[in-house]
Image (tube, rainbow over all chains, first blue to last red; front, side, top):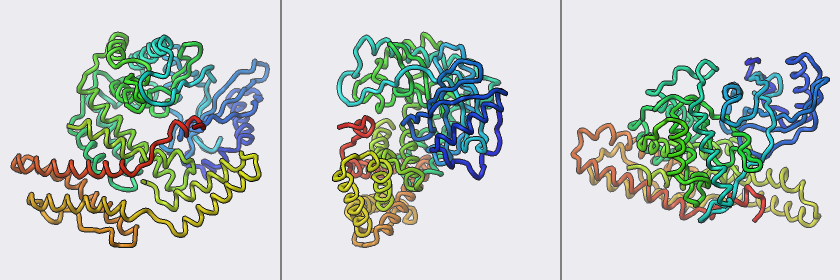
Length: 347
Length: 157
């Protein structure tokens, strides 16, 4: 796979033109495999603010047709500039593991090929369950909730047990510096994104820096592990999706994110699926990692900080005119509520 | 709001033009959508954020400055006076943001100086800063509309 020329002059242009993308991807696949490919019509999925996702059928000369996914990281996306390498590496590492994930086939960061970094993966059957609304109850039938909840925890435990060294990830991350590396990353993001100062966010970042925990081990961290980022079919999780923030780090980081009140939506359950105690008990049993309450608290505050910064990034993207998507200024209205939640969690 | 009003209006117009109108079948409904664009363009020429909104934020900063002055914090570190009497919203917002930058610097200062300050004085400065941040967040929340994320995501009310 290539990793060239991410600053190509045509980077980002024509990413909405799916007929052009089809032609260029078919040509790319031919160079990769030495055989001709026929690609069906592209369907764009209306998910996320970062990577553009297309589904399509593909038929290699003389072979059976199968479903594929193309994901492109546009230069104007929320967390741009992007590299497809970490997602591809994560999916490769997880092939054949207990973590349900799509098989990854090709990737490149060379924007000259399709206009942006991209990767191609298997299209997995299933839908992403997201019960909207707030209040008591999960919004799911109880038996279904428990079955999916147990698989949701199991997949995370398996991810955190997974060996990842030597697969293209940052090998310098240690139990001692994992939290600092992530905090540095997000603090630098604040410098790039924030259009105005937010004193409560500043206070939270200072508190986090004074309370950096030691990781129990360095695991692959999904970075956005939650309800809405997995596919389910017939009561079975078929794929964990959206690996764009994957990195080596403290496994508590994924717990902190999944435990965000935003994903409980008033149900009192982690991601509307499983109680906190059940989650931790099963996770500890299956991962072999003892959950440290102080670390979990740190990463719950950190999760809120990351969420506030994601909203701040959305405001910035919209203000810069990179998107006209009205979800972005709407996300901006959530900065104050998230900062209020942070305030309640700080001593 | 965190986005500027002109940019919000431009974004709303672009969304109506590119995402809504092409999917509206009825002639009358499309006409109404163009009416919205016309009125949004008219608002863009005359409307601005309310000075009362920024005025409350500036008032909270003035009160913080007085409290910290009483606690002996050096004048150069304090938020500066600004009021909603001005008519230039950009200047008012710039004053608010500059003062919040000073509040961030004060948060750094109190952490750095804690060991040299009398514990009671440090605690009082902490409390003043905390109350200020709470007041600002409470004000933002009380002036925000009820969220509609379920409707935005599901496309129905």
